[in-house]
Image (cartoon, rainbow, N blue to C red; front, side):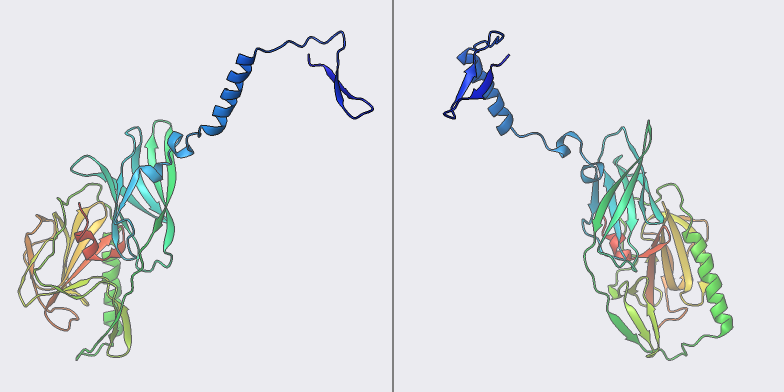
Length: 319
């Protein structure tokens, strides 16, 4: 036991050598070793939290492109341990399923709606494990992109009759129902391709002012194509729709699986029928000027889990 201290009248401190004091002298060598041990605790850094308990979303997911734009499709790749099985990416009320690519990696396609206002928002990873469902979050940052306005002059009257408006409404309902179906398998093979050789004449997301009055948003890409140019399937899939519509004329829709669809509009003729499984690059029709169109061209649309997206974004992805 340490001795008792008291202060004398001169203010100095003395040790009270009471009979019950059992203080023992500690060898100098032990004192030096103890001091060195304490010093090592001060200078040696502790491992960061991420090294001992990594955050799944930080180290297990890769997004391509790293900063997608609104109205585009991004590719999410899972690189975590095999003890977890990624099931889906959830954003708001929408979910995007994972699939196994040709190399065995888990991936998911994520569509960012054109109407998105925020440049940063959370996405959620849902995984299956032996102990149950696991969830984690990641903040996705979007690159800014401007969409111009284009003025179009049509010779035909833009105003549609109530009968035609009702027909358009029903056609949209039919397409909306189709696009809401998620086929739980990959039908595409490798990267997506352009449907025609011609360049883009009207990009995705352009605001179109028709005859100075009607304002619409272009939910697809228009390619330059002369009359009866062969139109190729942008990838393998099943023809789930083949019909003439009021706005897009002769139209084909192909289901590529996992909620991904491609739409081909303003065709002059069909070369496939509903239910056909088409190969990537197969001719499915000929370009034309049917429906409400200013001239021969091909309209290509892409929909992922009910969200319209820029077709060029899926063509550019390294699938």
